[in-house]
Image (cartoon, rainbow, N blue to C red; front, side, top):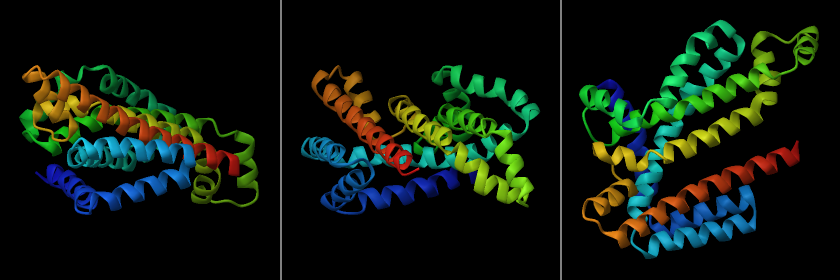
Length: 252
């Protein structure tokens, strides 16, 4: 119950932020964010995509989808990056965890939905837990890869100048590993989004539920429109994040 309640708290906060405000305000905030992060072309594409979602009546369920994905990604990042840092520093720990990460990514989603239902029931929070299982490995792997890729000579120079272990991690290792870490975060976002339709099978809401209902009733039109809505949500998130990465690289 504690795990489910914790997940529900994160989800409710995001849902209130996205669906509790007028949709034009939320849309404006997202478009401005896209402009600042990735430039005018991405902002125009974002505005067109969000207009499509709003005009076809998918705004509320689309924001519920973003809240579901956002809650899963936040929890993946909060737990995944520290684990990745640990595995990057300890080869033995990574060797022990690697088979588990392989299992998390290769096990069919329908298989681990069964224990999720058995232990946590149905609804959005259990769906988020299933999404975390599938979406966390990339951020762990790429964080560990980035940490192992920091040149030893740079770390030795930092230690020679008197850097403590915390300063070495905070000021040297994490900044140099950041491109790899952010690539892992981007992959985690897209993998979490790919679970939207699957978690609707155990009571998850959002656009996945709309598509599941369209499949059940063989409603080709609504299913296709809902599929395009998920596609646009994924593309908007990906373009904003990739644009932000490029701008950050240009600064450095």
